[in-house]
Image 1 (cartoon, one colour):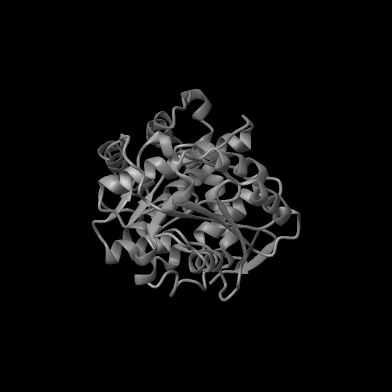
Image 2 (image 1 turned 60 degrees about the vertical axis):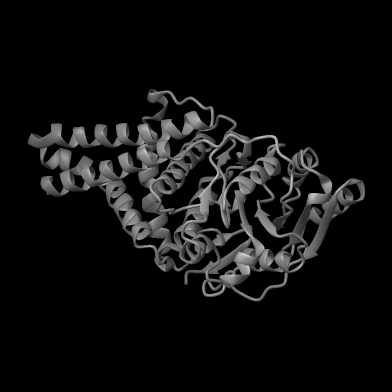
Length: 375
């Protein structure tokens, strides 16, 4: 068993070091002042987001980009609050094009349906998606335009950060978000893109249509970003890029309760078995096994006391590895993480991973007031 633990944790360390190197290899993009050319259709699906829409709309109003070169398309997914009224009021005051359309359900994935319906109603050649609980930087479209003009891209993925009020649950999600961003950016640096985030994602409309959009995975509620990434990689292997720059960081709102955190991650995990990327699947298995080991090692420390130093070393090894991964990403987001404040993160994460796996066995999960069956 000791050899099993040693091999498992060594494999984990090697993978994380590879992502750290991949992160460093992904160059930070410096945008230049050039004439704006790219035309964007910004798509924002929403359901009962009256609490978050005012903040989003304020950041949209501050976007520093020629009004004639972008449009905002809100897609209402059967909201029951006053979300529509908030958007209608914004439309009346807006100096640029804002549309409000209704979602048309044709699959098991409301968000994919919403995006596809918006694309049908879009006027411009580049689609860029975000979420209703996000806030956008003022130069968001400017920098995307600059990158697109300087690179032969079909899909451009951007960074996302969780906002935090300093609470325990918010800090957990923020640090977890850093780890996901590290894997995302690191995998692009290694030329094996594994993750992206629909809260900050741009792609050409003609490319979306060429790969048949979400066809083939629209029976899975989540994965509008990951499955599209896989399709784009397959059809355009050298034209899927990550835009690494602080100027396009989109901030998103954390979940308010642990129940929501777990349901969100069950939703994310629901698509894993349907992915065709072997690397993603193997990495998921490795991460689960390491985090499950963190939970059972205390029992080995009791019943195999003579090797307690070895087991303690594994804990320390895991904490240091995770800290290096998260710290690197936090610095990119201009955040500092004190090591002593990070010590609890790997242990909480291990419990979350176990809860998500056990919850996945239940066959369904709840999200945005709906219950979905695991496919």
